[in-house]
Length: 130
Length: 395
Image (tube, rainbow over all chains, first blue to last red; front, side, top):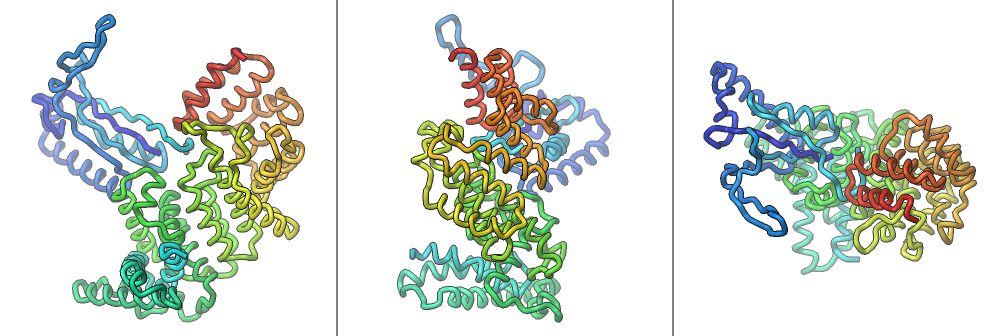
């Protein structure tokens, strides 16, 4: 089953990997950060090795967004960001796993302090396999 | 016969022959691929060899030996892992003699319990059905690189578990064949399975049957997949929307596949014991033989579901039983069965919606369809259920 892992984050300045630009993450002791990075690298290498990674993209700064909106019966185009909130969509990973549990395991690899990770099932053109 | 069909037919046999000499599936597969490339170059120019299988085997064996040699010079230690000098099935094991035994060994290797279900299917499509990696990737809507990774990992897993190509011991055979059949069935036994998978699944089911012709359940599996695939053209309309079984245009059903499935069942059903695949195939055959949806022989289907529930009491079998019960004894009888069902999925909600609608309980029907639509992960199914929810009470 396919799942998308959405990284909601607010790196300052905007950059990737996002944890490198998150004050909460940077405040951690260097050892802890390195241990975290290693754990991520190992976990993500396994995702690739198991043939579970379908696609991934890092997104440009939300200030680069152009928003296509309706104002009354007029379609208008304005500059982003889309969300007023603190977090923005920073990137996504599309994975294909055997179970929901495994998808959750992968999603748990992501997300430094100060980020929210969202796991969403992807709809299929074929039958429901769950 | 086009060259491509010859390769497809011969490749698994060539692979099996190579595997008898070397246990390394990855190396053997590469060698077969190289032999196919050589054939693609030579055959159109020089014509089909008299014995294509022997030709391919000779070329592939040469490539395999080349690969092992060059690898040996690079990494002497790994060379031992190729076990080219060792006999594969131990000194006491019987030498596989027939093509059937070769195929069986290959199928059993692909269905190795250490592999995940998705890897088992991918490996079978690749090694037994002869699909290219790109074609296997298309079946599962993933990039070729992802599928290549999955396949090579599956091979590495087999190596790590010391899994070897060998015909299973007679006392293990029933259990191994059972596992093989389940891998094949899981690909394509759903009504709304993608037609793309159908040909590969049917080809695999044929291989399973060829590997053990005396197994009635293998014939049952092949019959089930033939009868399921026969409906492929009618399962979706021109816009790609789901057409439910009873509303399908039966003139689109493939009568050749149906005839083969039905006659296969006619051969094995009297032999017994009648297992779950034969019963599912028998249910599919009853549908196939009804001239219209209305003419379906539901009492017979209900009886078959009752037998199926005896041997395989799964939630999806009980759901089928509820549907058949509703057709024979009325919607309320079906709802009563659903009320006590365990392992509920969105399919239970969908069936409940249909039965409630028939009782004229439109609001409850609409809610059941909406619950099902929210829970399904299939786009066409969601569109279908949302249409039903919108229609509840308006007709």
